[in-house]
Image (cartoon, rainbow, N blue to C red; front, side, top):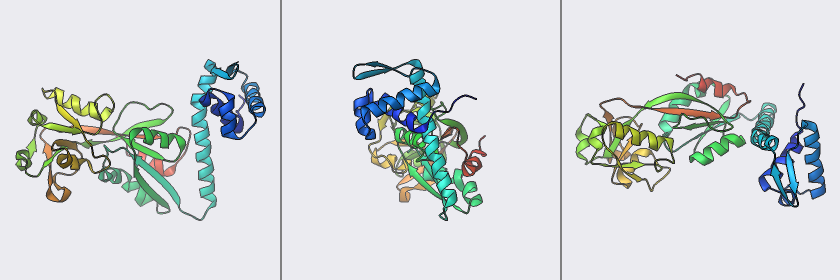
Length: 292
């Protein structure tokens, strides 16, 4: 059986690797540099590989060290999650399941995904938080978020993931806009409109998806990145004097100030779930069971 690294020593090694040296890592860990160096040396003996090349006060990671740093972070996060689950099992308090979602996914869409798991898990409390993509993935990696939801299909480094659903796109327009009176519109009808996006193309899979949908309809979209973040997506039709792709139900929105209109040609956008690898969660399994 292969040796299992000591988690305390692994923590020490990752601190050294992230700090690119022993001095600042020792201060961070409240250890002497000698004790920290000895801990890393013992880890190298445990694993049977050289992890660091030392040059004065600086260090460089070997290929083995880079692998251990990348995969060791996930191991430490999973260990923290294991501790949390164990403490929760020993406590009379209800389990807590935290779901994070990017601004591109509405609370309505999140609840629709969670509803079967909520009904089947009466002893679990659910917390839903909106997070920007970088904080979302960091929260899942660290174990603060048990399930992350975003508009994407590409794998995320050091996280498990799967596409678990698709939502139909619609278009939100100001209530006074001529398109608001139409039962359905085509994407080509937006060729002369400014389209609100939540992030610039190239920085967001979802923005790229929307821009490419416009290009397939025969035009290069005029777009504006929304200056109001964290509100329901349909408010961009007001704050940006623009139209916005949304997944909200058709009809009046934002107190009637906005109208959500169906697309004549249905267009589905994916929902990707992210979670810590090598962890178990019955609640998460209930949610993932809905995958297409």
